Image (cartoon, rainbow over all chains, first blue to last red; front, side, top):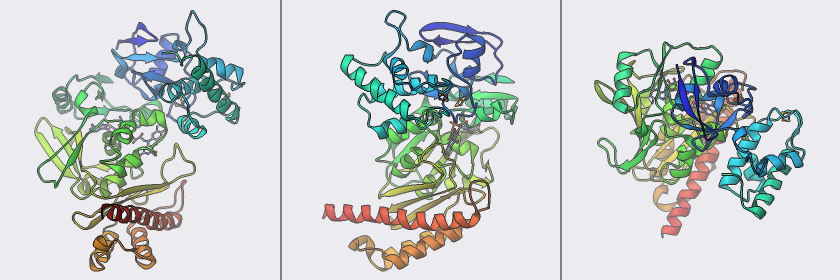
Length: 162
Length: 301
Ligand SMILES: Cc1cc2nc3c(=O)[nH]c(=O)nc-3n(C[C@H](O)[C@H](O)[C@H](O)COP(=O)(O)OP(=O)(O)OC[C@H]3O[C@@H](n4cnc5c(N)ncnc54)[C@H](O)[C@@H]3O)c2cc1C
Ligand code: FES
Ligand code: FES
């Protein structure tokens, strides 16, 4: 089947999509958007997190046909071509929150959503928001640092990207 | 495989009638795991995401139910239940907040939990505790059937829907007293319950509702425990006085809850542990709800 939707503000079309295929597969294998990672395909790790109509979801658990006509924003859609990395992305780089990097795209999207809704999260808020994102490298401390840093910078200079 | 994409509820019912073996998909948090791992190859998927009514809830009065009722659309995601219905459905809102992770709660729904009918589903204990008059609104092209929650679960991962039926909504009486939900797991997120327990006080009709999760082939009510504690509260005039229930009756309640379960040993825990944990959760949640009730009595006085 054919699926048409908006990805990162652009209208995209995928052909010959199998009816049981996930949004994650379509993004990575058919649309050249490999930012979202496939690590578990069962909702456990959060590395495939994308925005669907403004809500972060596991793209491995969304059937491709379900996004027909809807809006998807992936980690590729957070950076601004003019001004560069989003404040959350820059904070992950600066805080050293990235080791192998496999978990990073999902954590960045999920942290971005947290700061959009709650610009001054407590440590508990951060842990709660990231409880569905697994990282096997960092031990999470640097990730906590990155989100705190992003919150501080976003608070000083406006906010995370819209 | 076909992908059926009804735009309206009537179209969805017509599609289900025409393709009874089509698998409904709402949040997809159960269905997609089965597809991704090749555990299931339905002849068709029936996507419910475009049917707007399913993600709405309304409050009102309905035949066969006393007082104010929330008619919860089958596909309202857990995150919204916690955000929007904590006052009206506190037990379900608490249970919803323990499901999976934020991403799962943005998609997963009570309709999906009922459709999967897993004994470990977290909505079930809260729905059972909310009262015997909680009704699952099943619809088909033939009409509407209101299934009492106690009759909905018929076996391990089996429910009482007919092949041409879909869940339109669940009708849940608005809480008339404190409610609690408690769940055992290895961490605070992303946990399939080792076992779970929900309790709801119903001061209006002098009953106490319970629900047990993950400790029997189906979610189930601890009927004897409910009768015992309701008798205790009535005979001792506790609804009026707001005095302490006391350790003897609280302990007995916990024992009866544990006795109502028929747990098994599995990878998540042993049967003995489940019984023990249920008794502890039952005692604690009863105490929490009773404390809240007596507090509300005192502040009303
Ligand atoms: C990582 C992860 C963690 C999880 N954690 C928990 C947890 O902590 N607690 C818990 O209870 N569950 C948990 N689950 C399971 C799942 O999220 C829940 O069962 C959820 O309620 C399913 O809702 P859904 O809308 O995603 O259902 P779907 O996957 O869309 O559907 C589930 C079943 O219900 C049927 N169905 C859906 N809607 C209808 C309808 N309107 N009428 C008739 N049938 C319908 C489908 O055909 C299917 O059989 C978890 C799942 C994952 C992937
Ligand atoms: S790949 Fe989707 S949650 Fe792990
Ligand atoms: S950096 Fe390797 S999994 Fe997180």
